[in-house]
Length: 277
Image 1 (tube, one colour):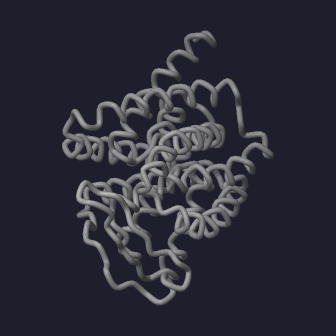
Image 2 (cartoon, one colour):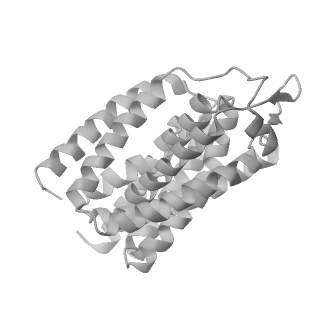
Image 3 (cartoon, rainbow, N blue to C red):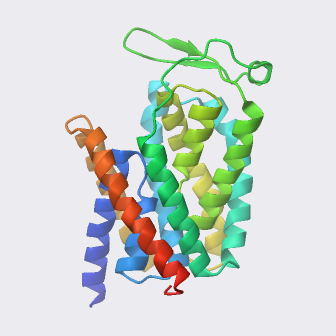
């Protein structure tokens, strides 16, 4: 395979990853890493480095729109980002010394968890009585709706902060945004409205990925020949996905995608247990 053919195939694959990732809310990382490792046989650490750059670019583009609309809780995002950034740096350092087959197995487990989180029941209720800690830290906020601004409060700040640290570790270790864990912390544990949870998670993913990417860059796991086509393709796919989102039944797509990533997770774990990476 020539370099030109490899690059074009990589752009096409990354475009599909960005498209599916944006339509399902899982992000492109959960698709791009299996694509690079299982299809193109790229070393998993270089695949993680490329996926982290794609997460930064994707998050930066999508988050700006939500921040402008006033849905994202920026103060909450920056507060929780303290936990995820520390976790991401720890995860990235651990990843350098972790066997690639172990990383593949962990990645498969996180894929299965993401599938479960995608089809679970979402929290759409607004909490009107939050915790004293949330009030003291001024984390309560409001978000715009068609009927006007809706005020909400949150609770379990400590538990949410702890889950965010774990999310950061997995982000640095596996090169994904850990959106499933972040939404779990905000939506289920802190009882934040789902729309605010997903947009604040998107805002945070880019910052978390940047902390991890610096470690991968210092260790030499960033290859421009792989990363550039991946970033280009994922951005194009995410842009197309944002345009298609209102025109297709995303719920059906999520179920189909969940089945697909369960198969991918099984493939990653099988190869990991059999030391094929």
